[in-house]
Length: 210
Image (cartoon, rainbow, N blue to C red; front, side, top):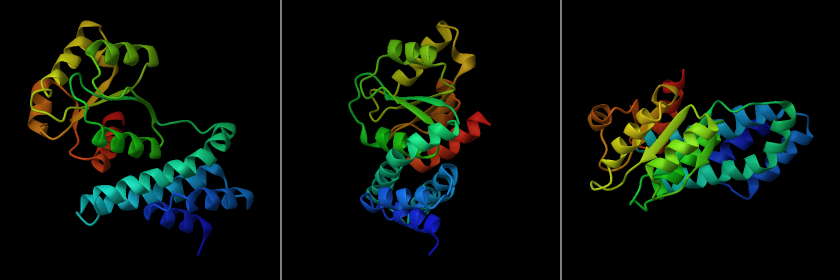
């Protein structure tokens, strides 16, 4: 098996301990860091993401694949920096105020990170002021927010309104998700996009930034 295919396969299967060693071997054999990333690590993550969309894979498998990719990225990152490879865009990520759920947010963060986005994860229970200040300071192209409770979902609109008041809304795309959130709700509150799961969050992020 080609070593790049091996990296993709091990990433897809969530082989967290094996992926870094295989990435190191690929680099030592002269394969470019960018090829290891795009045709190896990313392909593996995309494969499990595609199976997840078809209900042929489940959340634990996606998490394992994302962690395996992150383990490979830890080896690869210094080489990518040296080669001048740049992230697609900066993304500010967080769960809104009064909401402490983080599994979905973490999955989205890992999938975005694995797809060459620079992710600034603010964590959970994030107030509007922190979202706005970070978007402004980082000049991020995308703000991805989650709300997992029907009681916290309205706060997504609070953040969007805060961006407007600060004069930043036209500079950043807003992507929302979470159990009580639907596409219709996203449109109603003035978000740019909605994603029902982590795999589709990556697709939507790329679509919004084209």
